[in-house]
Image 1: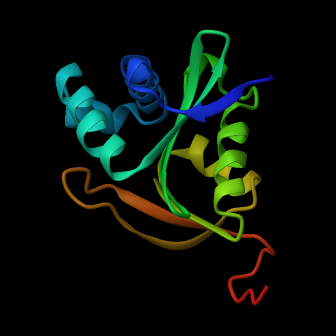
Image 2 (image 1 turned 135 degrees about the horizontal axis):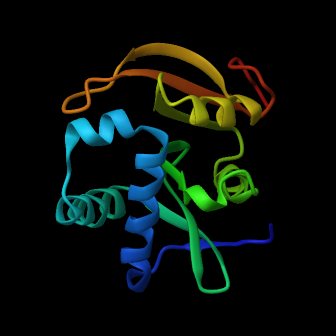
Length: 157
C-alpha cells in the first residue's frame, strides 16, 4: 500500500489517538482491560507525554490516518497501526522512516505476550536482547528488541 509518512500535526491528534487506542486493544486486550484507561486519560497521555517527549510520525493515505510511530533518537516508544490496515505495509513504512532517521541502530520494548508485535519486529531484523518486566502500572513481562544496520551489536562502521 502506498502511504505518506509525515510528522503528526495538532489537527490530527484525535485521529492519532484513535488509531493508537484501537491498535493497543487489538494487540493486547488483557492489558488494556486491566488498566482501564478512559478516553480522556488516553488523549491526555498521548498529547502531554508522547507528543512532548517524542517525535511523532504518522502514516496516511488520502485523509485516513493509518498508523503512528513515536521515537526519540533510535529508541522507538510507540508503533501502532489501525487493525484494519495491519499486514498492508503501513508498519513497515513507519519503521523505514525511523530507519532513515536513525540508520545505525534502533531499540524498543514490547510485551512478551504481544505476539503480533514480536513477529513483526523479528521479521524486520530485530533481535530480542533482554527479557524483563515493564514498569508500573503495566508490570507486564516485556522484551527488549534491537536492530543494528549490519546485524551485529559490535558494529564499527
